[in-house]
Image (tube, rainbow over all chains, first blue to last red; front, side):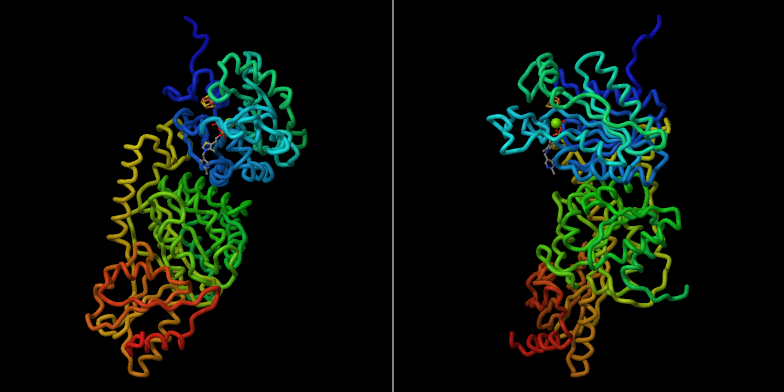
Length: 248
Length: 353
Ligand SMILES: Cc1ncc(C[n+]2csc(CCOP(=O)(O)OP(=O)(O)O)c2C)c(N)n1
Ligand code: SF4
Ligand SMILES: [Mg+2]
């Protein structure tokens, strides 16, 4: 019998706590596969955020740290500066990375820390029950924006990939999603390329993944995928914002 | 070993390097900036890393990452910066990570001032961050003791897997004194087999974490922490005392304030007064038992601090109501003078207060 699909060694054999239909799970798989396929699983040290992925340290099959809310990039900096030969990555949500941890992510990019970041943008605070995130769309309802996000009150949703791409030390910035098999393949390619950048010692890389939160969006998993495509992608365009230049 | 003349802040750096610390993450703030400046010059020479973080919050979280990866690492700051580090300190205590944190205190609250003070006693000994945790808090009174405590502090941190804080004031950071680098007492230090170094395919993943979602698990973790704190209380108390069997008044003071108190005591002795001193060197664990040795005739305990009375709470706990406890302090960077202390002791002695 030929094996056509196997669960990656990059993930542990435990059941995750993610809600049914949540795309955190897909992204975990892609990260695990990328670590395994690039041969860095044995020397990987990951940093989990505070958010729905707080327990990611139980899921990635490598050494892990659990960081304080938003501080994963600083924790990763400490690890990488001490162990430059190891592969160091953070996995963060949009509240974690784009709100409380904005300074930390901007400054790892600014210093060109040789770490990789997976950024899950689901336009909401999932873990705490659906409060507004800095990434919540205009008009989108959240428990702390009961009438929908109002630009005059809360500003427009922040575009982190565009912002980080302006920083010299960020060498790889790409936004992807995982709503279709085609998108999943592209997302995996981006994650692998981003990781390769660190392996080659070229600087900071980040992949933003537009994700769903069926539970707090109040939609079925399928409706969520459609809602993401119809509402998030027009505001958060997919694609590469930055690649290393020839001389990088 | 030969003695060298060093400024307190630089001596901290030299002592840390002597103790095998090659990593430093910090953010500038007066009156401790000579320390990160020293580390920026010296660490690259020995293959270490100095990194100026974007904030104290980032710096302490870099320390969390580095300590979790198994190395000796240090950060330093002064009061307002130390306030920002509390989140990270609590996480390190929870995840049981060893490190040495230096607070060269200045006046507060808020931005306060830049002159010496001891206003962060509560923050250091009561846990400035969230949760039921303890730091080992060491309070040196001179530059030699500062060096000794830094070197031993790294061992204590590693032995108990706990953050250690050096609590100094602006005076000790800025003063120059001759120092000698001595070997600390030998301790059995455990292997850091919990550190994240990459599994190399040879072991199960190591996880550095302070989250326990199940209440029974978190309680178990806290019971374990408390057992560790009890062991530290039993084994690590350090205190210096003088004439407490005989003193009519006993003064309690720590850090540079204790030196001013010693000058006042000499002056009082020349005038025929009998005055004792208890100088806690560990502020946590606090040397409560030392106060039991004070003679029964003692008229009162005077606590002298560069704040409005913080250690006085521990002194009151220690004497259990047996003696009246008085306070003298100056704040805002004002330093108590020996004459002021002499006057206060005479008042207690004469029953005027
Ligand atoms: C200092 C601090 N502030 C607030 C919280 C509460 N908190 C936990 S998760 C979270 C939001 C997480 O949202 P996000 O990063 O978007 O992750 P998601 O759950 O959506 O994946 C908040 C505010 C916390 N744990 N710590
Ligand atoms: S709350 Fe939302 S983001 Fe969190 S696991 Fe559930 S669906 Fe996913
Ligand atoms: Mg989110």
